[in-house]
Every structure is written in C-alpha cells, then in structure tokens.
Image (cartoon, rainbow, N blue to C red; front, side, top):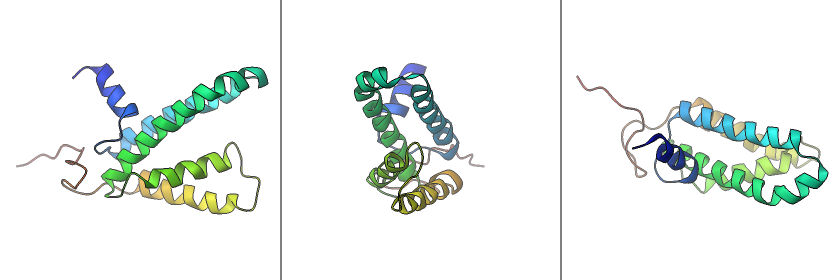
Length: 134
C-alpha cells in the first residue's frame, strides 16, 4: 500500500480502527489546519472559501473520530455529538450551554486521547496495534 492511499484511508474513511497515537497526530493536523485557516482568512475570503473548507474539515474529523471510537468499542455515530460540541464552542465558549458542550469535549479527550483501545479484535476490525506473539 502506498503512502498516499494510507493517508487517504486515514482521513477519508470511517471504517476500521485507529490507535491512540496516530489519532492524536492526525487530529492535531486537522485542528492545525483549522487554526491556520482562521488566522489567514479575512472576512471576504472566509465567506467565500469557508463553504468548502469547513465541510472538508468536519468530514475528516468525523472519519478520525469514528475510527478512534471504533477502537474503543463504541459506535462511530458518537462522533456527531463530539463534532456538534466542537462547532458550538469554536473558537471560544460564550454561552451557558457551552459549559455542557465543554463537558462533552472533556469526555471525548479522556475517552479518545487518554484511554487505550480494546484488546484484540472487536466488531469493527482487528486491533490496530501489532501484537507480538511469543
């Protein structure tokens, strides 16, 4: 498999499982692209290109979150709740309900960024970490 197809599989497919470290690196890339776009886009450019940039970022985020949730043994549909929370508090929380969305973000950080995946295969595929058998 080529590097290009592995990157396309990582960012454009929600099938399978994703280990914690590749998830954190890929998530940092997606958030970094979003922050960079916000920093360089003025109001007019943001209005014209935002209709293309944000759906791509949301789609790649949903794919990454789904794979990581699969590794934890959860349905990928939970990524919708996480993405709604991210959109609600981006770029900064301002309203009372944002506290609840912040709790969802905190849960997802612990669930996906701190806790390890399920050992062995689950209904979403084999363990993404290569196990060494003696």
